[in-house]
Length: 207
Ligand SMILES: C[S@@+](CC[C@H](N)C(=O)[O-])C[C@H]1O[C@@H](n2cnc3c(N)ncnc32)[C@H](O)[C@@H]1O
Figure 1 (tube, rainbow, N blue to C red):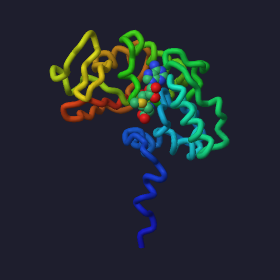
Figure 2 (cartoon, rainbow, N blue to C red):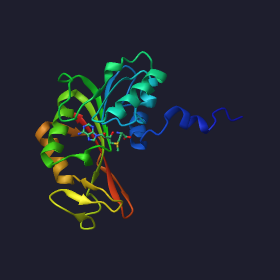
Figure 3 (cartoon, rainbow, N blue to C red):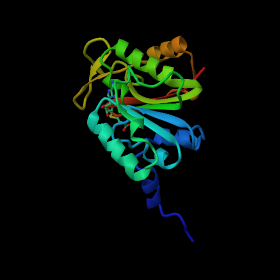
Figure 4 (cartoon, helix red, strand yellow):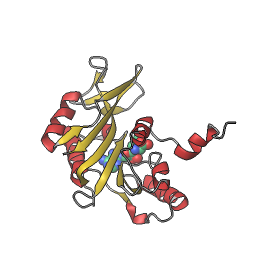
C-alpha cells in the first residue's frame, strides 16, 4: 500500500538545510551543474547533491572540515576528485572567475571578522559565479530582532547562546546586491529563533 518509508527521507537528504531543500524543489539546482559549498563544514548540505550528479566543490577554512568532506565524498561519490575540496578563506578563493552555476553559503557569514571581510567574501562568491548563476545564502542578521540584541561594537553582537557574532542588516544586503549586480530570486525570508537569533535566507541571481 505505502511504498515510500518515511525513514528514507533522512537516508536520502541527511541534514540538508530545509531552505536549500526548497531550492531543490524549485528545480534551481540540477544534475551536471557545478556547485561550490562555501564554508562547507562537515558537508551536510552537499551529501545529497554529490550523490545526485551535481559537480560539487567545497571550501572551508578548517582542515578538519575538509578532511571530513573528502571522506564523505570518497564514500558517497568516488568519482568526485579530492582536489574539489579545499582549505581556503572565502575572501580569497583559488577558483577562476565565473566558474560555478551555484554557490551556497550557509551559516558562515556571522563569522566575518569585519564589515570589510563580509563584503569581500560576498564579492568573491559573486566573482566565481557565472552570469545567471545562483547564490543561496543563509545568514544570521538583525532582521526581526532590531532593538532586542545586545550590540557590542559596530555590527558585532553578543548572542544569547554565548558567542559574539557579526550580524548583517537588510540595508547592507541591499547595498551589496546593487553594487555587485545581483537580482533577488526570492524575497528575503527570515526565521526568528525565539530570544536567540534571526536566520535570513538570501537567494540571488548574478546579473
Ligand atoms: C556553522 S558551520 C556551517 C557549515 C555548513 N555550511 C552548514 O551549513 O552546515 C560554519 C563553517 O564556516 C567555516 N568558516 C567560517 N569562516 C570562514 C571563512 N572566512 N572562510 C572559510 N570558511 C569559514 C567554519 O570553519 C565552519 O566549518
